[in-house]
Image (cartoon, rainbow over all chains, first blue to last red):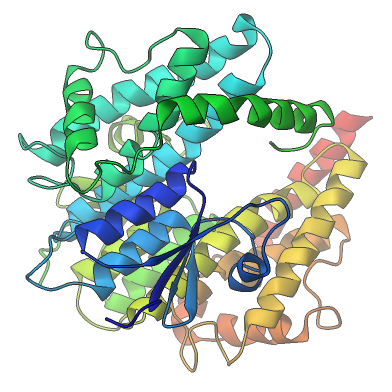
Length: 236
Length: 223
């Protein structure tokens, strides 16, 4: 395996970057990490992802791929042999289900978490908590259907949907620390609570969830930035 | 060979439903089209798509699949025949990227450039559409986004070929024109002329009429 054959442009705090790292680890792929500052955006990022200028970007043999879930599918398809587990299920219907839930999570979860951190009052946070609680209820149900009694959404090992959802656990804990309100609770989502522990402990994931205190620390300047954007009516 | 009990819950005139119809046609899949009344959602729709309650929904042997691009990928994987996505993983990643770009950057902006009460909002969205079209114009290297033959991205872009010209005419806008985006315009003509695509497009006049009355109602409500 050539050095720098696989490069990841990422940011230590990004749940989307974490998805790519987990996928690479599942496939035992060595890679070079380029920590993006985003302010200003590096030349490498602008060249590799001219459309969005966002992380993560995977560069393989000099060719860039953007969008975390698309990258994870690419990793699964490129390094598919008997030695490493598959990330997506093999059955077309199960694949469609996994993609559906991953898309659902992307649309609902992080935007709501961001809003919880951005808005000012408890009253304003309430509707976003409602969204998160609804997602948890639905994903708890989806877990039953996808896992079919096994430890992960993907079955015996961490798979596509585990990666899609689990990558947000770090930031979820941040909102819990900031506002003292838990969303992933035993009473509402017994399977997911247990799954979250298994996920965090899994060799594919261990050490990749960013340090909690560091995330809490950067949540403050992010909150300021997002509030400023919201104040001038921009998307944050 | 996948067992054949295929239903498509949809509405005539939806670009998302059209994507699925194209995919089914490409694979030669026989299916039952179940038209939906979105103002009065059927129990069947609510059962098969409880989360979003939207069309299209593909039901294959009683198992529902939602979200048009996910359905198209499913169709590609479940049935043999002409491939919709490329075989090479890198090309597949690019195809998925551009299909998602069309979903994220074209659809909503195109809709809002016409069907928004506030004039400034409409103009802002027109600009967004132009930006997105320029990016696609630069990206289009061959006859189709898929190369010599149309593929996943072309199918995803069906709303640009058929629906954008309709809504721009309704509102008197210049979204997709030969002058502004010659390659994209040429692509749209070429694409809509493909026999498979032609057979899947809805009739122009009723759709135009529907958008026109919707637009007129919107303007009337603004006064």
